Structures are given as structure tokens and as C-alpha cells.
Length: 469
Image (cartoon, rainbow, N blue to C red; front, side):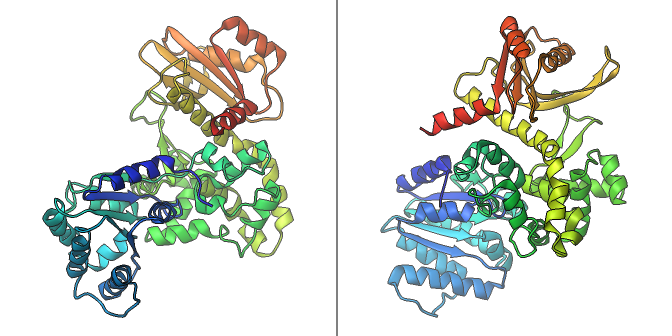
């Protein structure tokens, strides 16, 4: 089942309809759905699709040649072009007569095995771009390679592309299109457990409970997800053991560089290099208090929900899982899920606010959203604000998010108001987000103030359903 990606499909279709030479670069993390997007797009079009393999140049050239010859003649043959240049030039010439799409998927595998491929493409693009109707798509999962060797200024292909797309995991609303049979609460938890990467949430059965899904996947040694983070790291990095130690440290609450370094047993310079790579892979993110650029207060968190869940709950219980103690492990996980869902709910609320902004219904037209933490000199304690967004030096919004079974009372609002006064904004709007709604006192206080919006999780789900109509 193919869902979402309307913007990407529209952009690709616009390139296709131009009927002139186009060169699109598509990249993103493994499992995020790049190949599915391309196959869906080219399904009803004249196209040559070739996926590179992690082999030598001869093997890739043979496979590429088969794809081209089968397209042009309809015959499967062992015949091979003499070189990549000959094969590509043949395609460029074919496309002088008709609109053709050429996709080279997993381009980094091919380019690494044939060092001159980028320069060959540069030569042929410059030669045929004014006469060929070819739509060329280069796709890759190696983020660093695509950014450094295809998109960067030093690349021979720099300046030749006509479009680029970084394919990101789905947001909560898009993911819910797959979980349509699950209860509203289970949709959020499943999103928290696997995130928005298609290959991961497709492992979940929305006709089953959260407990059954976790047991069938993460707690099942033969399932796809049981060792997925380790398998992914082995494909992307040279020393997966150290990366695993760093991710595990962050997932279990060691969020500052000094804490990570101490937990892992490596100096901060070494850890910083590994963390940089994890950030490039979209696994880890660096956070600084909102409005501060570089700060000693910076912390690190796991950006990918699947990695976060696995490193928090699966790795530590690996021995028990291997021995089949599934029920015992789940009993350990279940009481921690509400706390785990706190950060997930914050992200869902951020997505809600962004959607509000884009629809023109935001009382504060913020440019960015983030979390703030720091010292409260009045209370003489550390304080935190879940979400903060600034429009200008005078206007901002402040939000608090509570994923808990009881209704949010007015005390939560009063604390948020007090903390907002640590900043000097003259126009302020407050949001309270709650899984379970709000007390009568909180509702009355919000009405009295006039600049407070109360949003229950049910309201978020309702807005999504209205959008889908």
C-alpha cells in the first residue's frame, strides 16, 4: 500500500511534464521509502530502472546494460555495453526521440565501483541537455555520499541538477493513514514505538493491540525489527559498537556531552565526532535552549522513534528476549510507556502547531519551535518550557504538553505563565496540550485570560480527520 508523498509526487510530475532534460537527486535514510516513491511515480511511464549493488564495476555495468537493452528491445540478454559512457550515451540518444525516465537507484554503490561515473555523467549532461528529453533520477541512501559527492560544490555534477529531494520519515498525521484501524491512543503509541519510517510501521498490525505488536516485533528474535538498529549501523558506519554505546547512553538519559563521554568511556572529542555522524544519519539531534545558538547547556536526544524505543527497552533486555521471556520483558516496558510517550507527544503537538501556522490559523506566526530550559532566578530552580515559538522580539507562544491519564488542572497553566515571564514579550499566547482533557478550573481560567488555547489529544485527532475529508 502506497500512502502520502503528495508533494514529492507533484514535484516529480512537474519535472516530467516539462518534456525537456531534467535531473533530480533523491536521497534519504534507508527504509524511508525512496524506492517505493520512485516506483510509484514511474509505474505508468516509459522508464529504465536500475538499482546498483555493492559489487564491482563489471557487475554493475552488466546489470545496467540488461536494464537498458530490455527496455529498448524487450529482450532479456547477456549482452553488455563496453562502458558506462557507452550505456549512458545510448540512453541519452534514445531520449532525443521520446520522453524517458532513467533511474539509477543506490547510486553510491555504482559510483564507488566506477570512479569516473560522475565525470561521465557531467560530460553527457553537458553534451545532450539541450536536445535530450531524458529525465534522470539519481537516488541514494548514503546521506553523506549524496550530499558530498552529488550535491556539493566539489562534485562534477554540481550545478547540473534541476531538483533535489531529501525524503524524510512521515509525520504523525501521515503515519495514521496506515494505522486507521487502531484506537486513537494506540495510534500515538505505535507512532512513538516505530516512528514515521514506512519500513518500520509496516511491521505493525493495526488490528492488534500495542502489547501484541511490541511482542511480535521488538520482543521476537526472528522479526525484522529485533536487530534492525544494529543491522542499519553496520551498513552505515565502521565501528558500530561505539555508536551503539553512544546511542544507548543518550536513550537512557545521559544527554550532555560530558555525561555521554563518561558513560561510553571515550573523551569528548572522540564522542563529538561519532555524534556528528549520527546526526548526519538522522538518528541523533542536538538541542540548545530556544533562542540560544551555541550553549554549554546543549543536550542530545534520539531523533528516530524506532531507535529511541529499541535502545531504551530492547537492548537492556536482550538476554531475556533471547530466552523467550517475552511476557516478563513487556511487564518491564509497560509501566514506562507513559513517561516515554511524553517526548513523543511533544513532537505531535509541534506538528499540530506547524499545521496551524501553515493553514493561517496561528495566533503567533512563529518562525521556529523549540524547547527551552534554564535557570529561574525567582524560584531559584531549573525550569523548562516544552514548546516555545517566537514571531518577533515582542510576540511569542508558550506551550506545555501532558501525556497522562488525568485532566490537566489550572496549576499547569499558572506555572507556564510564570515561566513565560522570564522573557520580555508583550504579546503572548499560551497552549496547553493534554491527552485526557482539562479540569473545569483550567477551562474557566483559560476563558478568563483570553490568550490561552486548550488542545486535547482528541482535538488533534479530530483536526486530522477533518483534513482527510
